[in-house]
Length: 177
Image (cartoon, rainbow, N blue to C red; front, side, top):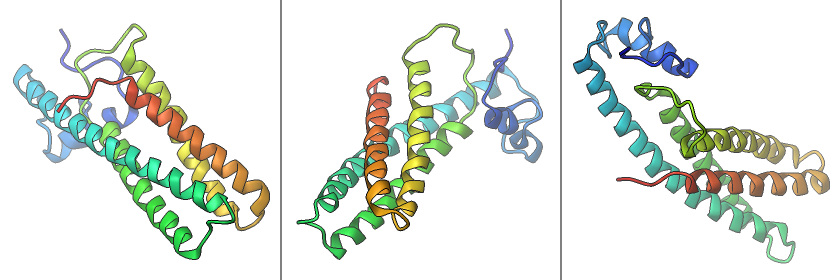
């Protein structure tokens, strides 16, 4: 049985593949054995526990961001202080989100590739949706300065669609700590 899967994310191949960067610089052993692969899979488990934990913190930040954004959207409750909170929380959410994504993209590869459609594949497909939504939401946040009326509505729609896809991605996974 091969010790590395046939298919890996390009980041996993670049870091953990037979000629990956981690093997070249000595973070991972150059020679892959069943024992060294077992240790890599333990590292993978740690990465994904952190991915889950930071992912839940990110979700809480997104919910708070939605609350703040909704208050800002209503002109009667808008204040500069509320807007500053929204911007600060956006930075927190972006950093937490990027950390979660980085853990996923740089984790050691699994033992085997999934052939059938299951909750993990659904989680991965939803990650494409919410990653696209995160980029769109941030781009539109910058564009609000140029055309407030149009971009405010688009930004809000993108943000809530992103939150929905992110929540659905979380719901597909059994949380384990």
